[in-house]
Length: 315
Image (tube, rainbow, N blue to C red; front, side, top):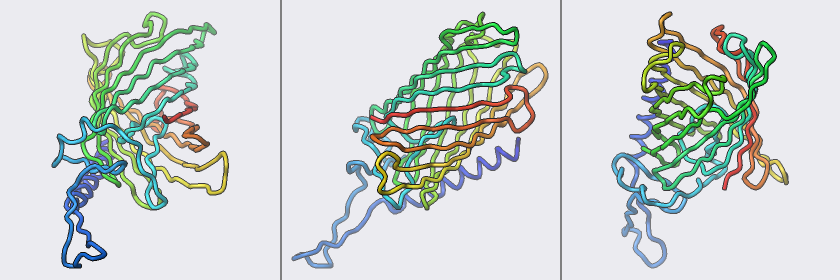
């Protein structure tokens, strides 16, 4: 576990170095052509021009009221591609349907079908809200079926740094216990979390996603849960653009490594690490389909496997 945290911190240091270097070259100088003398130059200030971003700590108060616009994509830049589980650092305006099949959840107590509808809505270049209610169908080991609404997640996210190659954002997340805890449809406790996510364009249309966060229960501790969960994740994806196809514009294979470490448990600290390889298909009209298969790496009995399916519509 300490090694994994060290790797994530090293990646964060690499990101900060890249960001500082990028902002050192914020202002570009262009020569004026035509009748203007080549010695005359025009100094262009760092501003938001359409789809191009130049958000940083030096102009932190800019962009909060600027309407959000879609990202500009070209052949020489890696597209900002949301994946299945890891929190994206960039903002997308999208409607998402998620289906997760969980085999042998909680030490083999049940198989779970989870359905979620998520709305991700950037209001400005700097501010975004997410809401994701869930519906669960549980088949217990006694072959009893339970169905109903699960818990709801609400997030408020802020963009800290963003340019053509990097995104760094933070988010405050609240998990609302809208599911019936007595029937096993929810955790029965509200949790508050803080997250930090960043994304880097590595070149050759390759993305690197990383994520750190904490979840803290409020109003007391559940006897089965930790006092605090430390969350982490890293993912790599590669986008292949398909030309001259009508219904399939691109394919993105990816692999995610996600985990969490619990503190304050009676039996001591526990951590769980899961691997999630998957594939994303860019269909048509801003419609995308993602599928993945997740399994634990450290022999935990939190679940045996998870199958993911996601349908995304940008608007």
